[in-house]
Length: 60
Image 1: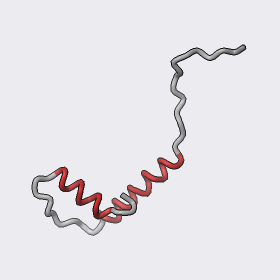
Image 2: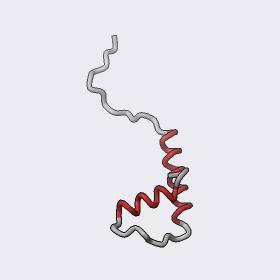
Image 3: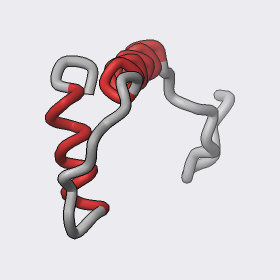
């Protein structure tokens, strides 16, 4: 989304609407690029959560 925002928007419109030939407002493409950058940053800095394990930890 950050690198190809127009392609992402066209794909999303084609998926959501039967007739995706809509006129986009000027803020849609920059907002799509920003959202893609936020997703990439969140993916880069995310860490594994503290999920319970399936096996008990031993303290030997």
